[in-house]
Image (tube, rainbow, N blue to C red; front, side):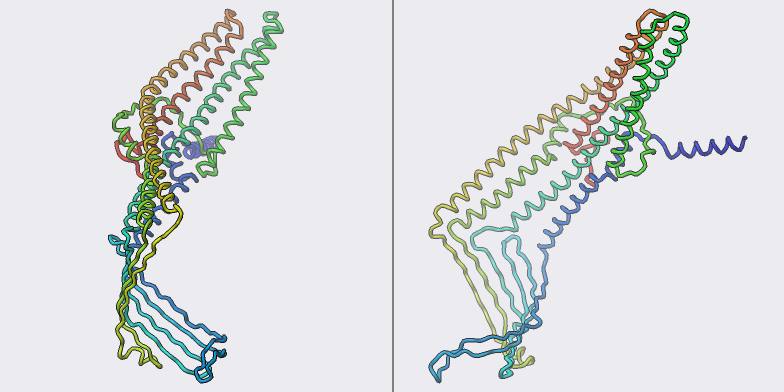
Length: 481
């Protein structure tokens, strides 16, 4: 018998060690690491970092090999015969092969690019079996836009802002996950506390009903009062079943959100109070204006439209580019000869395009871009006003919500005492049973108000964290990782 008791005790202790209570902060930590939303946010951040690395890689030299190992051609070509003074068509078969190696480097501060290349080509006609090699052992050149538009300068601004925006959106997204966790957590906590109340209520109603049955046999209670006791007992039993079903549904949904498979490990630690967190308004407001992704999106849109404006302005009346290169080349009938007695080559090309008449298309395009910039300025101002308004409101709510929690806690205690008093009065025959039911309803409402007030407090605080990207408890910025 003692061995049996020891075994049962060990099993219960083992089960308890695995089913420890999870606090709200622990569940938030789990959600930020395991939920699908967290995984999605983190992959978006990695994607943005890779995009920035790709942009940085474009600033480095690029070496590229381009090759045509073989091209066979069989066709008819047009030739002029001087002997016969007429045009003749002849069948021709040929083989062609080419290889090119190029080193290219963008010149960011000028907006052009410099390149070096080496080229080798081979051509053979199969009719007379003649071969020809052409080579460019070395050529260096430079290409430059002459109208003043530098795409690299604008890309640097946009890409840096994209990376910064991604980091801020990641940190804000994690706080949104925390807010979702708080709402789900308190939903289950409220249901579990209501279930405890419902079970207590059922035991009370069942006890009163059994007493009523005994008293009815003695003629101390009429049938209508006995029916009322049984109806309330049955309602309590139904309420227990409904609450148990809701809890299981919410626990399953929460487990899906957290990517957990076992809901039996959910034993939440019921919060009893809220911490007094100091959130200075000026600091919160400045941080929100600095870290708001809404404002940053407006600024990015403005920069992109300014880039389009700069390009449209420079190309409105003239498009011009410069291409220069110097190198050496040679042509020979064999491979050895193609690298002997190299001949010097130079070329310079200025390409100019002047729109003579576009019937107002470029002018209209530029005006539209300028209007978009004005819209961006207005949107940024509206976003700034909205951020300031929300921060001021939420910081002021911190004090209000804290007081609301304390008030609701006191109300809940009074509701419990009111219920006990109503129950004792009913047992003594001073009050009807309806007073007990009324006290139970008040107690249930007071409990929900108390936990909803705590939920509102934490949701409001994490909304401030989301907007400011700052932890006011630890007094440090929030990390996006």
